[in-house]
Structure formats: C-alpha cells, structure tokens
Image 1 (tube, helix red, strand yellow):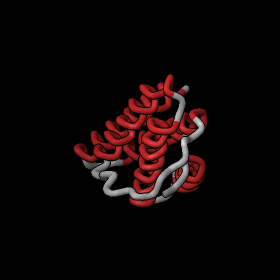
Image 2 (image 1 turned 45 degrees about the horizontal axis):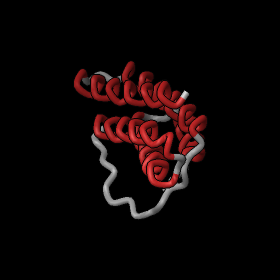
Image 3 (image 1 turned 45 degrees about the vertical axis):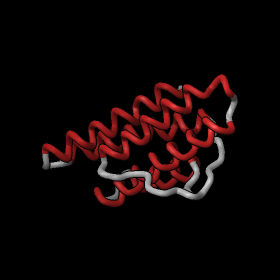
Image 4 (image 1 turned 60 degrees about the vertical axis):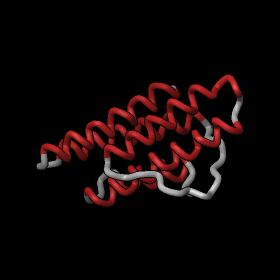
Length: 127
C-alpha cells in the first residue's frame, strides 16, 4: 500500500512521463487516497467522518473513470494528513488535465477529464 506522501512523490516524478506511466501513477494516487480515507472513517476523529467518506468516494469514482478499481486491499493504511491528501488531489488534477489535453481519443479524453474533476473535488474538499 502506497502512502499519500509516496503517491505524491511518484506522481510528481511521472507527470511528464508517457501516458501509461502517468496514468498508473494517477491510479496509485487515487488508491492511496481511497485507502487512507477509509482508514480515516474508522480511526480518525468522528467530526471528520463525512469528510473522509466523501473524499474516499471521489477517489473511487476517479479510479473508475480511469478504468481501475480498488480490488481487495488487505493492507491497512494510516490516516493521512489531510493537507498532504489535498496537495496530492491538486497534483493529480493537474496531471490528469495535462494528459487529457494530449489525448487524441475523445472518449478517453472525457474519461481522464472526469477523473481530473474527482481529483479537483478531493483537493477542494480537503483544502
């Protein structure tokens, strides 16, 4: 299980890489957010339950837009720092918008833009 901090580092490193590499990093980033937020729902402060739940749902929907799913993640994640998760959401949004701009397939472009919208909502929710 990749942490939010590690996901940010990897995505930042791969932001200018080929489409497949940056998409894989984006899926890993969404995964880190989804698992971290799930842990936050169960172990985080009760007053942030709704925030964790909404951010997790946005991450799952972002993954789905990229054609990925969470699967069986048996590894437990730590409750992420919300500022770091917001930063990752912002970078994720930026990278996905860049990928959409270079996509020649209209349906793929729309899917990547939908994923970027979910990442942007994560950034805004946690900011």
